[in-house]
Every structure is written in C-alpha cells, then in structure tokens.
Amino acid sequence: MVSALDFMVVWMEVERVCFSAGREKQIMKDRKRILLIDDNDHDVELILTALDDYHLASDVVVVRDGKEALDYLYRQGNFKTRSKGNPVVVLLDLKLPKVNGLEVLRQIKSDEQLKIIPVVIITSSREEEDIVESYKLGVNAYIIKSANFHKFFEAVMEVGLFWAVINKPPPGSVRKEK
Image 1 (cartoon, rainbow, N blue to C red):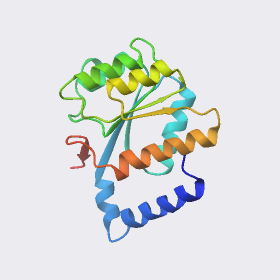
Image 2: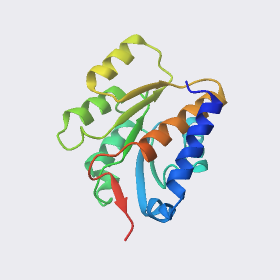
Image 3: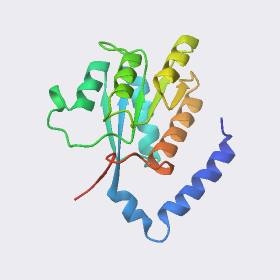
Image 4: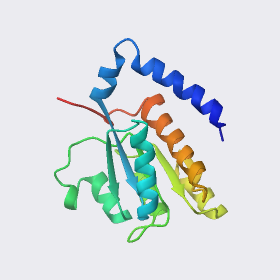
C-alpha cells in the first residue's frame, strides 16, 4: 500500500495536471461511469463517499445483487432503457445474493462485448480459492476489504484515482455530456 504522504504527492500532481490550463472543464465533461456491485449498505456508502469526496466519478451506478448487475450490463429488466456504453470499471463484491460475484465475473469475461471492461474485486474474502479463481477468470485487481475504516477508504480512493483518472478506459466507457 502507498503511504499517505506518497498518495498525497501523487494526488497533488493529478490535481495539478487535471485542473490546470483549463483542463478542468474538459474533465468535467467526460463522465466516468462506474458500476458498483455490493449488497452491504455500509460498504456502498463508504465507497460512494470516497469516490464523491475526490470527484473521481460523476456517474456511479449501484446494484445490490449479481442478477441486477447482469441486467445492467446486458440492458435488461429495469435497465432496458439505460444509455448505451459500458462502465469505465466494475467494482465487484464476491459474496452477492442471487448470482455470486465469481459468476458475474465469469459472464463479463466470457462475453465478447463486455470482456474489455476492467473489473476490480473489492471483497472481504481472503480465501485463496476465490483469489485464484478471480484471476483465472480475468479480474484486473483483487482488493480485500479492510476492517480499518481509513485503510479501506484509502484503498477505494486509490482504485478510483487509477481507474477513473489515470487509466485510459476501453472504448465506449466514457460518456460525454451533450
């Protein structure tokens, strides 16, 4: 994990680059859609707070189970009319009702249209079997939720910073305002 001082130095540089020379306006036009799949209200609130406090995403979609996540990705059910395009990243818990996180990951990474979406597992599972299976299925990162509020908050900030600001997202995942 990056030290708090190192993170602050990196964050200050990101702010300098992103918000200098009139780039703030352009960045604010590029909406970064993040799909958050988690059934734990406390974790969802913390993740949303971390992302919102640092302006890392302006469009976070929260779904509470694996079936709802797949409906969102395939534009089915309640999401039939959602706008086209994929999220810039999927933040996925493993222990989900209806369809578990590993099955959601399996379906994402086996679908030709969805497999380019980066998926970050954010879970409490430390089970080696879950970690190995996640990487076999093509997960981009595996983060274990910390019981320490500050460590978890920092981890979410770092994930958000990387995937929503630093990383160049796959085509179709950045939606521009009209």
